[in-house]
Image (cartoon, rainbow, N blue to C red; front, side):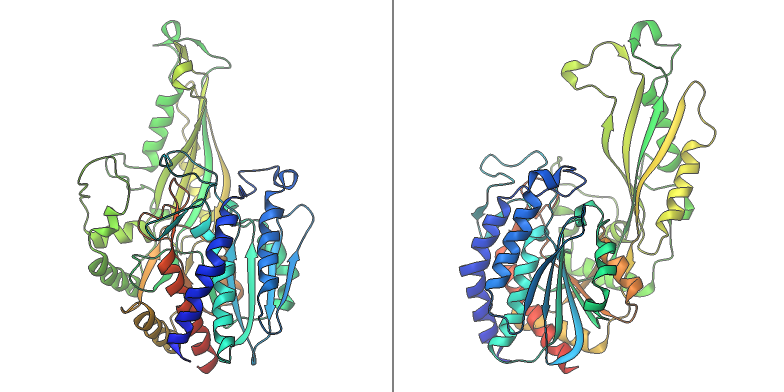
Length: 468
C-alpha cells in the first residue's frame, strides 16, 4: 500500500466531494425521533438518508450494493454491502440523525447553516456523525484504487442513535444473516483527545435517564398565603437529590453505581493524562476565568469515564422568569441523567436510584421517579496484537505521532449491543469529537484536516486486517 497515494486520494475526495456534501447535509434539520416525534411527517429523516444513499450510489466501489432498509414506523437504515477478497467481515458503523439546535451559537454561526472557518466545518451533525458514511466508503475506495485487498465490508448507518438507538435492534435482527459475524467493527462516532494523533476509545459509560417529580398542591396558590405551611416542591426536590449526590463534590452516594476500574484502563488513563495535560479540562467553555479543578488530570479522566455522575438536564413546573409571580408552585419536575460506569448494570442502577428517591417520602409531598431509559455501557475486549500494531503504524504515518487510548464519558448504545452479540470481534471506536468541537451543544464543528487523516488511518487498518 502506497500511503502517499492513499493520502492524496483521500484529501482530494474530502475537498472535492465530502465537504460539499457535508455542507448540504448540515442544512437538513434532521433531529432524532425523541426530539422530533413527527419526523415521518416532516420528512427531514427521509431527505437525509436519501442524500447519503444518492452519494453512495455514485461512488465507483467494486461490487457495492446500496439499500435503504425500512421497517414501518421506525427510522430507516442505510445498508451498504461491499464484497471483499475474503469472506471475513468488517462492520463500519455511524448514524445520520442529529441532536436539536440548542442555544448559544455564535453570532456568525447557525446550527443549520454550514460555515467553514479556520479549517473547521461548523453546523449541527457534521462531526456527530454525518461524515461517517463518506469516510467509510472513501477509505474503502482508497484501497481499491491501489488494488489493495480488503475483507467483506458492511456499512450500517442508523437514524436513531441520538435517541438511544431504540430502533436499531429490530434492524440487527432483520439484517443478521447479511451482516454475518464481524471480526472487526469500526465505529466513527467517538471522541479524540486532541487533533494530533489517532485515538481509540476503550470504554463507554452507560446512561440512566428519568424524571423526578414532587407534588405538594393540586394548583398554585399565593406564596405569601401558603409559605410556612405548604412545603416548597423545589425544596423537597433539593432534599431528595442530596440522598444520591454530595452537592459539595458531585460524588454520587449509592455504592451500587460504582465498579472496580480495570488496571489496564487506569494505566491507559495515566498515559492519556500525561499526553493531554490541562487540555482535559481546558477544552470546555468555562464561565470562570482560568479554571483549575481540584482533582489531578488523571482523576478527572477516571471521573469522566469510569465513575457515575448526575446531570439535571431539564425542568418542568418552573415558570419563565418573566412569568414568575408570587405563587407557591404545585409541583416541580426534574429530568435526571446519570452516566454509569461501563460495566455497571443499568437496570440494577435504575432500581437502586428509584428506591433511594422514593423511600421515606417527605411529609406533605407526593414523590415519583419514573425511569425513561437505561442504556448499557461498554468495555472493549483486549486489543489484538495486529490491531495495536496497525493503529500505531497508521497514526505515525498520517499524524506523525503514536496512537492513544482513552475512555469516553458518553454512550453509544450500538457498542453495547455489538459487544454482547459479537464477543470475539475487535473494535476500532474512534471519531472527530475533539476539544471544543461541542457535539450536542452550540458551535459544533468538524476538524477537516483530522477528518482526512482519520479516513487514511481507517484505510490502513482495513488493509492490515486483511493481512493479519
